[in-house]
Image (tube, rainbow, N blue to C red):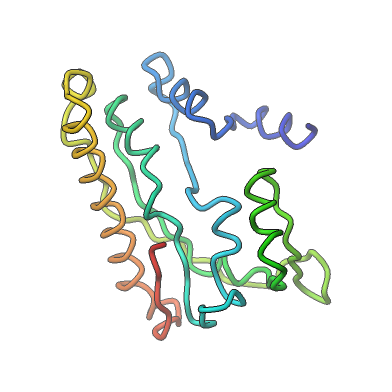
Length: 188
């Protein structure tokens, strides 16, 4: 509750569909909204999880369409951003699979992260933010309201595909500049 109050004072909103839709509404059009789509589930989708290599980066995007639906409904663009180095600030111990499921169910992180000296102090890590090309809705919000369910979903999928393509493009284009030429970004 204390952290939530502090974040709301800074202008943060809940990540629920209703709260994000309200933040994107016309009366608050001057505001900008930043969303990190990975969340708790993405914390578990990387090394040391079986099947992952230390050079793998994971982005949990394959079935995340909600923000694209809201972007079409409110006629707002989406700007892809990738942060190089964020995954190296902490290390994670591999825990049993049931803790991952429980974390997702409870919507809290039940993983063991550690940093410097085994404490929750992040490792010193240079971060590099890369901004991709803006993805604009293919139809206006007025037109989006008149589309059938299938047509609307097709436009949502087009935005989603463009976003994933752009994230992969900016990752591959900039990974060598950051010193990660052997890294691979997996869209999960």
